[in-house]
Length: 228
Image (cartoon, rainbow, N blue to C red; front, side, top):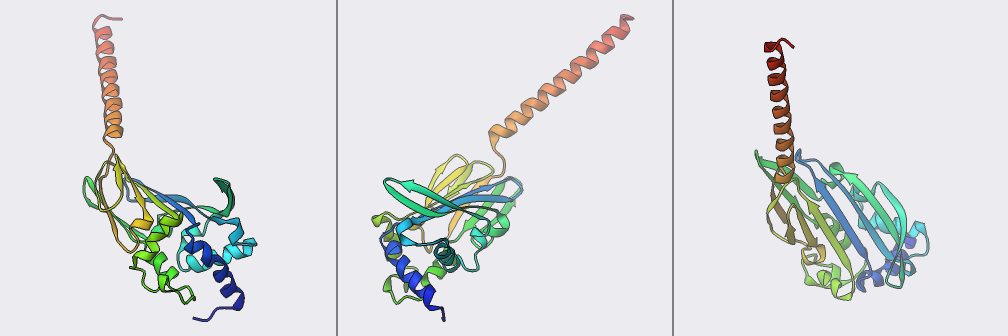
Protein backbone atom coordinates (compact mmCIF):
# COMPACT_ATOMS: atom_id res chain seq x y z
CA UNK A 1 0.00 0.00 0.00
CA UNK A 2 1.56 3.30 -1.09
CA UNK A 3 1.02 6.38 1.01
CA UNK A 4 2.74 9.74 1.14
CA UNK A 5 5.44 10.55 3.67
CA UNK A 6 3.26 13.05 5.52
CA UNK A 7 0.54 10.49 6.13
CA UNK A 8 3.08 7.94 7.34
CA UNK A 9 4.46 10.44 9.84
CA UNK A 10 0.93 11.32 10.94
CA UNK A 11 0.01 7.72 11.61
CA UNK A 12 3.24 7.16 13.49
CA UNK A 13 2.43 10.21 15.61
CA UNK A 14 -1.08 8.96 16.34
CA UNK A 15 0.01 5.40 17.05
CA UNK A 16 1.14 6.00 20.65
CA UNK A 17 -2.33 7.27 21.47
CA UNK A 18 -3.96 4.29 19.79
CA UNK A 19 -1.81 2.00 21.87
CA UNK A 20 -2.09 3.98 25.09
CA UNK A 21 -5.86 3.83 24.83
CA UNK A 22 -6.63 7.53 24.59
CA UNK A 23 -9.23 7.35 21.82
CA UNK A 24 -12.83 8.00 22.91
CA UNK A 25 -15.53 6.76 20.54
CA UNK A 26 -19.30 6.56 20.99
CA UNK A 27 -22.14 5.66 18.63
CA UNK A 28 -25.88 5.85 19.34
CA UNK A 29 -28.36 4.21 16.95
CA UNK A 30 -32.14 4.68 17.06
CA UNK A 31 -34.26 2.21 15.03
CA UNK A 32 -37.96 2.86 14.32
CA UNK A 33 -40.76 0.38 13.63
CA UNK A 34 -40.34 0.80 9.86
CA UNK A 35 -36.72 -0.45 9.99
CA UNK A 36 -35.35 3.07 9.51
CA UNK A 37 -32.38 4.16 11.58
CA UNK A 38 -30.70 7.38 12.63
CA UNK A 39 -27.47 7.80 14.53
CA UNK A 40 -25.19 10.26 16.26
CA UNK A 41 -21.84 9.90 17.93
CA UNK A 42 -18.44 11.35 18.68
CA UNK A 43 -14.75 10.59 18.20
CA UNK A 44 -12.00 12.26 20.20
CA UNK A 45 -8.23 11.98 20.62
CA UNK A 46 -5.97 13.98 22.97
CA UNK A 47 -5.11 17.35 21.49
CA UNK A 48 -1.44 16.46 21.93
CA UNK A 49 -1.89 13.65 19.39
CA UNK A 50 -2.57 16.03 16.50
CA UNK A 51 -1.23 19.43 15.57
CA UNK A 52 -3.88 20.62 13.11
CA UNK A 53 -7.32 19.98 11.66
CA UNK A 54 -5.62 18.59 8.59
CA UNK A 55 -4.05 15.89 10.78
CA UNK A 56 -7.47 14.98 12.16
CA UNK A 57 -8.96 14.79 8.68
CA UNK A 58 -6.14 12.49 7.59
CA UNK A 59 -6.80 10.26 10.58
CA UNK A 60 -10.50 10.11 9.74
CA UNK A 61 -9.76 9.26 6.12
CA UNK A 62 -7.52 6.34 7.10
CA UNK A 63 -9.56 4.87 9.95
CA UNK A 64 -12.91 5.38 8.19
CA UNK A 65 -11.98 4.97 4.52
CA UNK A 66 -14.90 3.60 2.48
CA UNK A 67 -17.08 3.98 5.61
CA UNK A 68 -19.46 6.98 5.37
CA UNK A 69 -20.10 7.11 9.12
CA UNK A 70 -18.32 10.46 9.57
CA UNK A 71 -19.48 12.13 6.37
CA UNK A 72 -21.67 14.62 8.21
CA UNK A 73 -19.28 15.62 10.98
CA UNK A 74 -18.72 18.80 12.98
CA UNK A 75 -15.38 19.69 14.52
CA UNK A 76 -15.52 19.61 18.29
CA UNK A 77 -13.41 19.92 21.43
CA UNK A 78 -14.02 18.60 24.91
CA UNK A 79 -12.36 17.97 28.25
CA UNK A 80 -12.26 14.58 29.95
CA UNK A 81 -10.83 14.87 33.41
CA UNK A 82 -8.00 17.36 33.14
CA UNK A 83 -7.12 16.45 29.57
CA UNK A 84 -8.26 18.31 26.47
CA UNK A 85 -9.48 16.36 23.44
CA UNK A 86 -10.06 17.24 19.80
CA UNK A 87 -12.24 15.42 17.32
CA UNK A 88 -15.75 15.57 15.97
CA UNK A 89 -19.39 14.83 16.54
CA UNK A 90 -21.36 13.25 13.71
CA UNK A 91 -24.90 12.35 12.66
CA UNK A 92 -26.50 10.33 9.88
CA UNK A 93 -29.15 7.86 8.78
CA UNK A 94 -29.46 4.17 8.00
CA UNK A 95 -27.89 4.57 4.57
CA UNK A 96 -24.52 5.41 6.14
CA UNK A 97 -25.01 2.64 8.72
CA UNK A 98 -25.41 -0.06 6.08
CA UNK A 99 -21.66 -0.74 6.23
CA UNK A 100 -22.07 -1.96 9.80
CA UNK A 101 -25.72 -2.81 10.38
CA UNK A 102 -28.52 -4.81 8.79
CA UNK A 103 -32.09 -4.30 10.00
CA UNK A 104 -35.05 -6.43 8.97
CA UNK A 105 -38.49 -7.44 10.16
CA UNK A 106 -38.80 -11.15 10.86
CA UNK A 107 -42.56 -11.14 11.35
CA UNK A 108 -45.42 -8.82 12.13
CA UNK A 109 -44.18 -8.13 15.64
CA UNK A 110 -40.46 -8.90 15.54
CA UNK A 111 -37.33 -7.07 14.33
CA UNK A 112 -33.80 -8.40 13.89
CA UNK A 113 -30.63 -6.25 13.83
CA UNK A 114 -27.09 -7.42 13.17
CA UNK A 115 -24.07 -5.17 13.71
CA UNK A 116 -20.45 -5.89 12.78
CA UNK A 117 -17.36 -3.82 13.53
CA UNK A 118 -15.29 -5.73 10.95
CA UNK A 119 -15.13 -2.87 8.39
CA UNK A 120 -13.49 -0.58 10.96
CA UNK A 121 -11.19 -3.35 12.19
CA UNK A 122 -10.13 -4.05 8.61
CA UNK A 123 -9.06 -0.42 8.24
CA UNK A 124 -7.12 -0.49 11.52
CA UNK A 125 -5.43 -3.71 10.41
CA UNK A 126 -4.49 -2.09 7.08
CA UNK A 127 -2.61 0.80 8.67
CA UNK A 128 0.86 0.81 7.06
CA UNK A 129 2.72 0.13 10.26
CA UNK A 130 4.66 -3.01 11.11
CA UNK A 131 2.97 -3.83 14.39
CA UNK A 132 1.99 -7.27 15.58
CA UNK A 133 -0.88 -5.84 17.57
CA UNK A 134 -2.71 -5.01 14.32
CA UNK A 135 -1.74 -8.05 12.27
CA UNK A 136 -4.73 -10.14 13.35
CA UNK A 137 -8.00 -8.37 14.12
CA UNK A 138 -9.15 -11.41 16.07
CA UNK A 139 -6.37 -11.00 18.64
CA UNK A 140 -7.31 -9.92 22.13
CA UNK A 141 -4.54 -7.31 22.04
CA UNK A 142 -6.82 -4.73 20.45
CA UNK A 143 -9.61 -5.21 22.98
CA UNK A 144 -7.08 -4.98 25.80
CA UNK A 145 -6.64 -1.31 24.92
CA UNK A 146 -9.51 -0.67 27.34
CA UNK A 147 -7.08 -1.44 30.16
CA UNK A 148 -5.19 1.69 29.15
CA UNK A 149 -8.23 3.97 29.01
CA UNK A 150 -9.56 3.49 25.47
CA UNK A 151 -13.33 3.77 25.20
CA UNK A 152 -15.63 2.63 22.42
CA UNK A 153 -19.33 2.40 23.24
CA UNK A 154 -22.35 1.48 21.17
CA UNK A 155 -25.95 2.06 22.28
CA UNK A 156 -28.83 0.75 20.15
CA UNK A 157 -32.45 1.70 20.80
CA UNK A 158 -34.94 -0.63 19.15
CA UNK A 159 -38.61 0.18 18.34
CA UNK A 160 -39.88 -2.12 21.10
CA UNK A 161 -38.82 -4.28 24.02
CA UNK A 162 -35.59 -6.19 23.37
CA UNK A 163 -36.11 -9.95 23.65
CA UNK A 164 -32.46 -10.96 23.26
CA UNK A 165 -29.00 -9.55 22.54
CA UNK A 166 -25.85 -11.55 21.86
CA UNK A 167 -23.74 -8.90 23.61
CA UNK A 168 -24.19 -6.00 25.98
CA UNK A 169 -26.71 -5.06 28.64
CA UNK A 170 -30.44 -4.92 27.89
CA UNK A 171 -32.49 -2.09 29.39
CA UNK A 172 -36.05 -2.25 28.07
CA UNK A 173 -35.83 -1.24 24.40
CA UNK A 174 -32.11 -0.37 24.57
CA UNK A 175 -28.88 -2.39 24.40
CA UNK A 176 -25.63 -0.90 25.69
CA UNK A 177 -22.43 -2.47 24.37
CA UNK A 178 -18.71 -2.05 25.04
CA UNK A 179 -17.29 -2.35 21.52
CA UNK A 180 -13.79 -3.11 22.76
CA UNK A 181 -15.16 -6.30 24.29
CA UNK A 182 -16.89 -7.41 21.07
CA UNK A 183 -14.34 -6.59 18.37
CA UNK A 184 -14.46 -9.12 15.58
CA UNK A 185 -17.79 -10.54 16.78
CA UNK A 186 -21.21 -10.03 15.21
CA UNK A 187 -23.81 -8.45 17.46
CA UNK A 188 -27.39 -9.70 17.10
CA UNK A 189 -30.47 -8.09 18.64
CA UNK A 190 -34.09 -9.24 18.47
CA UNK A 191 -36.88 -6.95 19.62
CA UNK A 192 -40.58 -6.23 19.41
CA UNK A 193 -41.59 -3.77 16.71
CA UNK A 194 -43.87 -1.71 18.94
CA UNK A 195 -43.45 -0.27 22.40
CA UNK A 196 -46.33 -1.54 24.59
CA UNK A 197 -46.67 1.74 26.49
CA UNK A 198 -46.97 3.70 23.25
CA UNK A 199 -49.57 1.34 21.81
CA UNK A 200 -51.50 1.41 25.10
CA UNK A 201 -51.55 5.20 24.97
CA UNK A 202 -52.77 5.15 21.37
CA UNK A 203 -55.47 2.60 22.21
CA UNK A 204 -56.49 4.62 25.24
CA UNK A 205 -56.81 7.78 23.18
CA UNK A 206 -58.76 5.92 20.52
CA UNK A 207 -61.09 4.44 23.12
CA UNK A 208 -61.73 7.83 24.65
CA UNK A 209 -62.54 9.27 21.24
CA UNK A 210 -64.98 6.45 20.54
CA UNK A 211 -66.74 7.00 23.87
CA UNK A 212 -67.02 10.74 23.17
CA UNK A 213 -68.51 10.10 19.72
CA UNK A 214 -70.98 7.60 21.14
CA UNK A 215 -72.04 10.07 23.83
CA UNK A 216 -72.46 12.85 21.26
CA UNK A 217 -74.67 10.65 19.06
CA UNK A 218 -76.75 9.58 22.09
CA UNK A 219 -77.21 13.18 23.26
CA UNK A 220 -78.26 14.45 19.82
CA UNK A 221 -80.67 11.53 19.44
CA UNK A 222 -82.22 12.25 22.84
CA UNK A 223 -82.66 15.92 22.01
CA UNK A 224 -84.46 15.09 18.77
CA UNK A 225 -86.86 12.78 20.59
CA UNK A 226 -87.58 15.50 23.13
CA UNK A 227 -88.09 18.00 20.35
CA UNK A 228 -85.28 20.26 21.46
